[in-house]
Structure formats: C-alpha cells, structure tokens
Image (cartoon, rainbow, N blue to C red; front, side, top):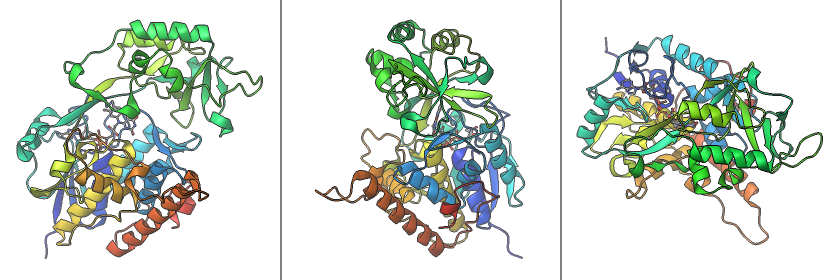
Length: 456
Ligand SMILES: Cc1cc2nc3c(=O)[nH]c(=O)nc-3n(C[C@H](O)[C@H](O)[C@H](O)COP(=O)(O)OP(=O)(O)OC[C@H]3O[C@@H](n4cnc5c(N)ncnc54)[C@H](O)[C@@H]3O)c2cc1C
C-alpha cells in the first residue's frame, strides 16, 4: 500500500486556508498549523480561520476592475476564500464584502471536516521538515520569523498597516446619516455629512489626538492603499476631503444638498448591526480615537465595537528569493504565500495561497510546477513578485499594470472597454489553463451569486 504524501501548511489565514484546501483536493494529506487561540497576533481577535483583521471587503467586482478579474479567477478555480466570500456576501455596492463571522466559520468548517486535513493548534517555531507552505502572514510570530530569516539569509522588510474602527449600528444617528451609493450606485452605504465648520473641528481634533507610536516608526513606510486617517490629515488639511471623506457624488438624495465632506459607513454583518468607517484606518490611542470618531456628524453617541489598530507587516524581498511558482529559489521544498510573499490584500493572499498549495501538492506527487498565464491577474502577480526590482520592493495588489492591456489609440476604445477586454482575455486564458492542469475546480460548497463567472 502506498503512503499518501504529506504537506505542512503554516498559518490558517487567507493564504494558508486556500493552500490547505488546494493541496487536499489534489490528494495530498495536509497538516495545517494555526497558533490561534493558543497564541494570538496583535490584530486577530478569535480562533477562526481566515479572520479578516480589518475591512470586510474583497474589492470591486466589475469587469473593468483588476480585483474583479482576480476574484473571477479564484471562483473559477474553486478557491476556498473567494468561494466562502461569494457564499457570505453582504450588500456593498459594486464591491464584494462579507459577513466576517459567517465567512470565517465557513472556511474553518470546510477545512476541519475535510478528511485529508489535520488541524494542529500550535505555534510553529522552526520551519517544518519536508515540503511546506509558509503562510503565517504579516504578523508571523517572532520565533518562526527568525527561523525563516536564518534559512533565507535575508532580513525581512516591513511597512505599517492599520485597521478602521467598527461602530455599533444602534448608536448611529439615522436622522443625520443617509443611505446612498456614490454617483447613484446602489444605496448600500450610510453617509455622514460634514459642514465646513464641523470638518474644521474634526481635523483640528485629529491633528492633536495621541497616536500609538511603534518603536521603529520613523523608519517604516505606510502602504499607500491603507494610510491612517491621522497621517492623511498630517499631509494636508484638505487631504482627507480628497480621499476617504470625498463628498462628490454624495449629495443628499432628498434635498440635493452638497456637503463639505462626507464619511461613509459600510455594513459589516448581514443583520446590519455593525458598520465600519470606510478608509478610516487609524493608530490613534483608543480614548482619543473615540473622541475623534464622535466628532463625525451622526456619530456623536457612537459605540465603537472594534477599535482601529496599527501594526507592522512583515514580508520577504520576493524578487530576491521566490520563483513564480512561489517556491523559494534556493530551497525548492519551501513555498511562501500571502503577505509574507510580498502580496497585499485578502484576495491576493488567498490567490497566492491557492497557487502555493497547488504547486506544493504537485511537487509531492512528482509533477512539474505550474504558473498561470501571463494575461491572468494571478499570473501577472506572481511574475511580478519573482521579477520586480528588489531595491525598495513593496507589497503588490491586483492592478492593471500586472497584465497586458491594449494601448490607447486615437479614436480607439476607451479605458473601460480596453480593461473589459483584458478581463475577458485574462479569465479565458486562466480557465483554459485550469483545464490543462486538471485541478478540481468545483466550488467547495453551494454558492450564492456570481453564477455567470462560475459557469465559465
Ligand atoms: C492591521 C492590518 C490591517 C489590514 N487590513 C487589511 C484590509 O482591510 N484589507 C485587506 O485586503 N488587507 C488588509 N491587511 C493586509 C493583509 O491582506 C491581511 O493581513 C491578510 O489577512 C493577509 O493574509 P495572510 O494569509 O498572508 O496572513 P493572515 O491572514 O494573517 O494569516 C496568517 C495566519 O498565520 C498564523 N500564524 C502566524 N505565525 C504562526 C506560527 N508561528 N505558527 C502557526 N500559525 C501562525 C496567524 O495566527 C494567522 O492566522 C491588513 C493587515 C494588517 C496587519
């Protein structure tokens, strides 16, 4: 009787969860190591797998949106995180946002009940022996980070990332807040309008509020897509008004009134009991954070159910170390995925996890590693990780710079049309590649919505 090959996956976050299921579906036995709840990270709260540490959004799903293409690719691949996102969606205009508890529960249950996945709730302090996927994320525990640093012989890189506060829905003043989507999109958001005077007082309070100052603050970079609100205010009095507090397209639906600035709340759970402040990542001390949040019109009595926090993200200098298959060049039995591999974002982490799990399983089964086509978003992303300029390397999101999009031509199709074309070409190429590598791609459970994409 032949012995089934075994894979170790470290971390049951966005990347590790997808890696574990992809490998198990390929027929490999998986030891999935997750240290929570025995030991936790500064940003996680619970014990569930794939816990969303901040926003509950996976980004826009439109066919001219780069994240939309990566979402469609992961749905076509039957990826665990994206399938769970589709099954636990809450309204969020054109974005895919989820009920975070149901989402995490679905991912956890799917893995726990899979006959080929054994879960070990323990901290991994040394790199495992044998073929492994390391997906321990931006908050990798110190002991494991040190073990990985010794093996790759390179220091880690880092930047700061912050999470936004979540508000108890009952504490929002609905006489002030109004429902509307920007530019008349689906009215899924609650909008909180500022007069000029209210904005001035808010910015003044923000500029004097006390911040949590990490010890290596001065040397750290912020990730531009997740800049703390206090850092935006520091860069310019009006900067928040041109960013997360932008009022354009948010005139009052009944009176037509225009506002000086508008903050938006996005629904967090399917019951609408929790709402997060969009683009309001913050590292303010909790007492000061509460005071500043309560200066937002409609939030004068806000109860914060989860405070914003700021944390260092740790990642490897991927271009020096990684193959596009996500194996370490010098240690091909070790695969790295998620933020640790130099991606940024839940969706990107899960997609690289799926690829690392697929390739790790193929290695164990004696098959060559695979890389998605370069026209696909995942193909573009992993090629970028392996070949980017190493000096000043920063984590990468899904974006149209990663894949070929037809050049602009006088009298030719506009940006939207060219991107929609790239979306279709990328998805077609990805789906036909899935057929060639013969992975199991049915969704791991019944899905709600996105029927058109699942059918491709
Ligand atoms: C504060 C903060 C806010 C963020 N906000 C957003 C956001 O709003 N939107 C977004 O798209 N992205 C956000 N990110 C970035 C990133 O997309 C997420 O962190 C994402 O969860 C990364 O996926 P991952 O699989 O790499 O890591 P994670 O999802 O963090 O998973 C890693 C897992 O490994 C476990 N682990 C760590 N060390 C060990 C060990 N030694 N042994 C066993 N288990 C271990 C952890 O407990 C965790 O469960 C944020 C990051 C941070 C730090």
